[in-house]
Every structure is written in structure tokens, then in C-alpha cells.
Amino acid sequence: GNSVTQMEGPVTLSEEAFLTINCTYTATGYPSLFWYVQYPGEGLQLLLKATKADDKGSNKGFEATYRKETTSFHLEKGSVQVSDSAVYFCALSVGAAGNKLTFGGGTRVLVKP
Amino acid sequence: DAGVIQSPRHEVTEMGQEVTLRCKPISGHDYLFWYRQTMMRGLELLIYFNNNVPIDDSGMPEDRFSAKMPNASFSTLKIQPSEPRDSAVYFCASSPKGTREETQYFGPGTRLLVL
Image (cartoon, rainbow over all chains, first blue to last red; front, side, top):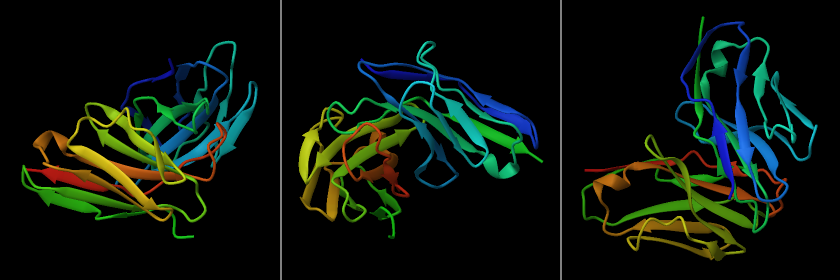
């Protein structure tokens, strides 16, 4: 079946620190990979995505590269801000029957000034 | 577009009562998803629809839960009777098509507390 594993949090950082959140997956078929972000009290919103191997998704200073050989999609940001405090979800879709998403457990990130 | 709209945003009810959650997807989107989020179980897909037809309801916890989509602009998730373990945040999401590249657009959620 399909599954996503991401590092557990919380991750606590100081402003301007480097952030990495690890994500690995198993999938039946060729998945698209996503990072969604959930700010406090809100729904999830797409942060970035990649649809084929070696693609790099990027948005708001965040980046993730689709690595088929290591089945990974790690999220990185070079210099975090307090406003990046949120829960980050890695997810995949194989689209076999609709774009059903399989989510990881989420990683809470807290950035302190 | 206003995005995915959910109502109510907060619901407090007593055990045994019927609860109805509502969702208006983004206009033109063919797919609608209902999720439940709890600390213990994370994000769970409950059911999803394609063109108003339920496609996969394998995530619906039990017969107390039911979902309908009478038209392209409205869906409900009903819990009858409600139990304290149903307390969670319920999200609705929609997407234009069902390809694997598609983004899902989430509503703000309904926070349900069953006493």
C-alpha cells in the first residue's frame, strides 16, 4: 500500500536557522509528492509539490526535491521566520482512483525570535 | 473565488445528539473530500465524491457517520448519534480533477466537541 513517514516534532528553532523536515514514502505506482502547511486554527494549504523524479518544488523560500532512488521528499528552508511556525504535512497521491492523498503524521515547527 | 466554505466553524453538542457539518466546494471542482483530524490518529480520509457520487467511503468509522452530496455545490457529513470520541476537527477539501498532480483545496474546518 501507500504510506508516508515524516520526522516527529516538535522542531524548535531560532529565527534565521536552517530547517529540514525529513519525509520518505512507499507507493504502489508513480506518486506525486506534496508538502502541505497548516497554520494555527486554519485548514491545510499547499506549500509545494513535485510530480516526477528529480523535480524540485519551491515556494516561499521552501524547497523539496523528488528523489525516487531514496523514496524521499525532504523539505528545507535556509532561514526560517517566526511566521513559519506551523504544522507541515508530507503527502503523496498515485491518482489511481481520484487524487486521494496519503498523509504523513505531520511535523510541528516552532520558530522563536 | 471564496475558497472551500465550511459551517459551522465550531460545534459543541452533547452525546447522543445529531450533528450535521456542511461544506461548499470551490465552483467547478469535480472532487470533494471529507477528512477528520485528531491528535491520536492524525489526518484521516473519511469519504470522497466525484461529480456528487461517493467513490470511496472505506474511511467512514461506522454506521453512525453518513455523507451526502445532493448537488455540485453542497455536501453534508452527519453523525447520529454523536459520541465523545467523535470530537475532532473535520475538514472538507475539493479539487478540480482526479489526476495525481492535482492540488486539494481545504476549508477552514469544523471543530467538533461532543460532551
